[in-house]
Length: 123
Image (cartoon, rainbow, N blue to C red):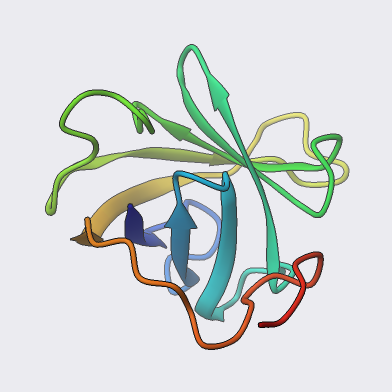
């Protein structure tokens, strides 16, 4: 399943946003658009008892916690679902908070023409 997720309404920068594409099978994400947020082009997803963690290229680089977003649950996330996002900055003792919402859920499994992630082999 592919999920298009919008992050926005951050405390410190209300105009910052990111649009992410989440793949709940490979547990990877890619950045589709952003402004005001420093994000790599893609990274790893990690499930957590409180939600989903957006990591950089390794699980040791947590970037955001998507509170309440449960990947892999029966029925999965639904379009319009919302929750809080907590960012982890390099020197952040008080993580920046914002909101996430699911824009689109695509349940079809379609083989991509080209590999999206750098660690995959192109077809």
